[in-house]
Every structure is written in C-alpha cells, then in structure tokens.
Length: 276
Image 1 (cartoon, rainbow, N blue to C red):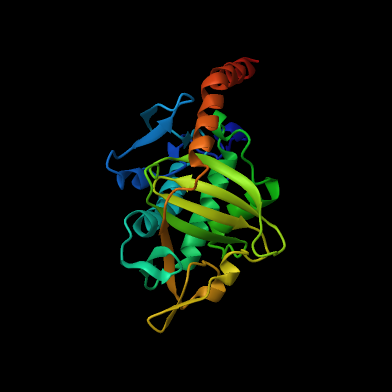
Image 2: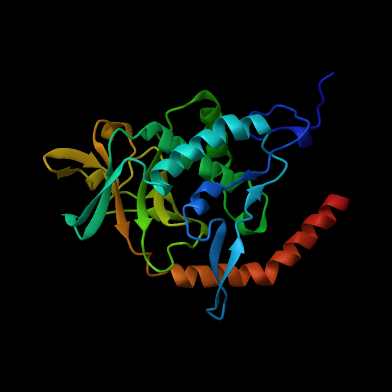
C-alpha cells in the first residue's frame, strides 16, 4: 500500500521514497576546478579571510534517482563548460570590447538553460538559513519542476555568464534578485548568481534578456553570442573573462555578518518547530 506521508516525497518527481540523496546546490565539481578543491573563501566582518568547506546542500527533499539522472547530468555538463572550459578557445583583450573571451563550438544551449533553471529551483526550495529569503515563487518553482522532468525548452531562462579572474573570484554568494534593465529597455526579473570563478546574470522572464539582446558579435568572420536563447543556436558560444564586481567584498561581508549573528537563532527556532 502506497504511503501518503509527504515528508517522504521527492520535491522534484513527487514519488514517495525510502531515503533521500545528499543533493549539493552548487555541485562539488565547480569547487574541484579551484586550487583548494571543496573549500571556499569567506570574508568576515573585520575583513579577515578564511576558508570553509562547501556545505550548502538540500536535505530530505531530492530522491536518489532525480539526483543521479537529472541533476548530475546537468551539473556535469555545466561544469565541463563553465568550470573546465572543455573545447574553449581563449581570445585576448580587444576581441570584444575590453574583455578577453573564451569561445566554444557546438554548445548545447538548451542544456545550459536547464542547468541555470535547476540551480534557481534548488536555491528556491532549499531549507537552510543562507537561502531563507531566496524564492523564485511557486509558479516558477512548479514550471521548472515540470520542465526538468519533461526535458523542457526553458525559454524563460537566459544567462550572461562571466569567468571571474579577480583576487576574490573563488568566492560564492547566495543569489540576489533584481530588476535588470539595459539601455533603457523594459526591466525584467533576474538573479545575480556567483559561484566559484563564475558569475552570471540569469533572467527568469518570458521577455528577452536585455543585455544579451545587444550581444551580436562577429569574430574572424563568424557569428558568436553569449546568449543561451534559441535564436542564438548555430552561433559560437562566448563567455567573457573579467574581474570580480566592485561590490563583491561589501556583499560578502554583509552576508556573513548576518550569517554569524542569526544562524543559531534560526536553527533553534527550526528545532523548536520540529518538536511541536
């Protein structure tokens, strides 16, 4: 007889299972591309740097099949492009504006859209202190969930990704929701995501990513684009190399100040609620 206990239900496939996977939100492979592997830089409120292990994972929500079949496949492909730069060719500064760029042939843009969608979904459903204010909303949570199971097109996702090369490039921060605009375009819903050595402005909107609408480049007589949208298929895929954003240090200090001051309070409240 099938159980009706929703606490044993996978958040993705909704099947009732006996046990759950330890599902890392940001896959370990992104950290393995760094010199210190699964360690990340943390800035304390007094400016001191230290390292902590990556421990952001989803507990008791994702079944082993979904972790292995869906997330692992998307993560490994994204790591091969964004982490290991498999098949990428570097072009020096001056090729496009003031940035050096890395160009890839034959990238699966749909799969990269699916990766960013899955990452936003995982951030949104995770029940941990650092992500308690991160939510993409129930409508997009459900839409992404169904598209992950059905191999959807994720046409509402695009991402302007950048390989971060500055001194704080190994840092990781929780996603920041903002209204993105460019050159007077209509604002769209987007997230600023920073994972080790990679930053991205990910749009979550039926309207086109405003920055990428202006990114139609020609290098060596061939069309290339940093966009993941379907209209960019056939063009070589480009990712710019750039220093970490100027406001990164302030963001990390603020985030970990809050983390140190209130995480224990949040955990105590969660334990108290579980006992009731």
